[in-house]
Image (cartoon, rainbow, N blue to C red):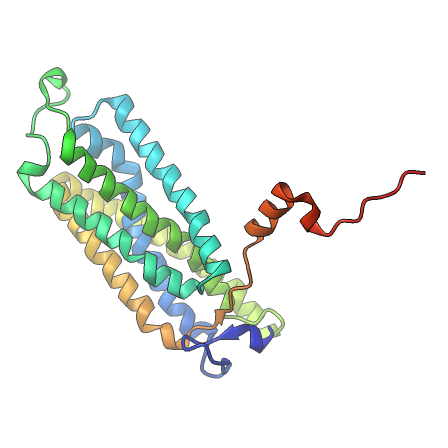
Length: 265
């Protein structure tokens, strides 16, 4: 690891005794767990919410859920591009991650206020008589979904890379710790999903979607506050340009790759 390529949150050269290492990684473990407590159950139960509460048709619910999942992956690319090209990974998460909190907050508000969602009815027995979400309420639903997708995607793309930055792969001890980080990171994803599938799904089924989504918003906010608390301890890689930019330059401007054409015999 070249120390000049990594800086602290103020932009100064890092001190390996102070910045990075296992201590910095613990803040990221917390965010990994809490975001997956939120993400996994809501992704798996999204169709149930759209069909049962918002009274969308089954095909419409599935399409909306699929678009939401695809948008999350697409926004992950945008987050990776921004963190590689312009701002550090930690700042990307802290600047764009709150959109996830805002999105779940809007969804919780919509689920709580009767005026913002259709009246309850039995979708299995009288689907044709159920009033589907529409107009401004439908717009609010999509705004909430896609705001959360923006924040989730950027966190998802930056978090593992920021964790890897906390360890010097050229140092034998830190190289081993880096491998351990990804083991614990994977465990955090599974553990968070496990907790979410028990806690959040139970709340959705027995306490209401407003309570479940409201708790999700609070959990995301707490996770972001924990990451913000670790800001003085992170090693931040200086943005050096995204590979995506160079790929696009090569595709759109073939001469910019610096290739020397071979002469035919």
